[in-house]
Picture (cartoon, helix red, strand yellow):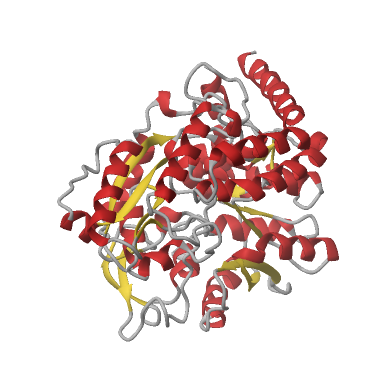
Length: 506
């Protein structure tokens, strides 16, 4: 009943949005196009073809919407700090990108504006594309962000190099769910065959907590460090708990340490900040923990340079923070939020624009092997003489618009789009968290949350890499969390959740 009420409230604007879909958006003849400065998250260097893509985007949107877009590249690693600096200093920024960033922390400091009225007036394409995922953009009952989420749920597990798995004679059924014991048997066989210098798990320091890849977790639209529902919100136990004090977390910590002692981790696992894909490309790693939805096998295979085999550990489920991984917001300093939102909605329409921002220009960065039904749906490959290393425009961080209207690289097929839609539509009701739509407001305990996050940053990576014996480090971790005020934060989170549940029930 509660979930239906939340979903109904998220989707209630459908009729209004449909009626607004015919609003004329183009600029008047005597008006200058409004410049929209849009943050473009990168993984380092600015793409050499960025200006060409910007010009191509503007050829479409300037006559259609009366806007001119400036693509402003920001390294993912500096995204939060640089956007915050731009907003606080008054530098022009019209569209901010948040990736695995707390929406509440932005709203609490006044960085983002409310979007409810703009969504009603101009958001028809967004609503059609995002549906249930819109729950991720709300905070304190108001809309502050627009998700870009093609997956209405997440599943988790481990990806291993298929050539090595085959050589070891071990078979994994992609439709079956496995355990850490099954994974450990693979690791033992791999280590026995390949020996010293070869390691099982990549990406330990860059992804410093694997607990959520092996257990269902609902962090209630915030972070694991501020308390979780240990059953993912899927059962009737809606008690907020300290994740790091759970028996299951201790078991996880013990397992990570045992793996390190067995040589499954590299000696520098706690400090090596290379991406997991880069480590696997070296040829000395078996695989990595990852989400395991429809497209991930092909994506990881491409990014790692080896065909990867999926080993699912946690079946698909949905909770609010899954819809907060990539979102777009309009800073409070934006001078023309109407035009900015019109452009944002346009990224979710059937025009190929989201694909252009993701994959660049056809014939330059890629060529089409097979075209799908919608403008952005296609199977593509790199253009002749182009690869991931020298492409003039490549955006491995997929953050733009309707991602089910963005081309996929071969060997994926057009079946991907149908499979993704079926994945979304067929999620059982019992695999949707009972707290979907709730987002914790940490403003009243901001000091404690800052202290807690510092403690977690100090210890969680050590535990994930098995770098120290949990018998020694876990008690210190918990002691420091208590000193930082985690009990106060969890009590506040529980209080807000209880009030929200009562409101939903009413």
